[in-house]
Image (cartoon, rainbow, N blue to C red):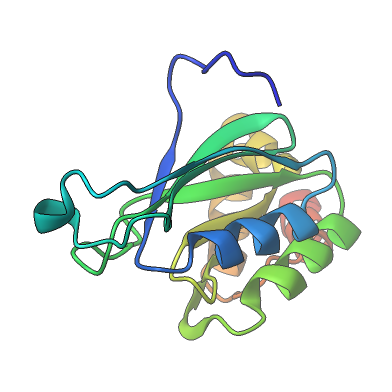
Length: 167
């Protein structure tokens, strides 16, 4: 992994399972890898509460995008206020990522292509074609597509195409 840090890097705050999460994500996304790992020292233990030698951070890449995972403790939880969008090119790609990321995740958090994985991280699995439809369609086309969108959990590209092209 390149040791030069990108200008803006998303940081995942995990309790004690950053290594498990990083290994999980790297197994899902091809063109992904794990980079540098840092460990806690005895300095600051009264603040962070972590044992010396425990993994502190893990740099990793998913599809060329750099991320950082931190074992920061139980102080903060993930919310849907931040999510990661996976722009898919086909229904097969939607099905693949949806299947992998919903495994063990929160079923109640699945709506309109959004999901929450088993670590509590929110993802949007969406076809890029949907964005094109919403940006270029007539008012009627956009409304038909939106009506279908709000009926779905996992997005169905063919349903969007039919709604968009309806005469």
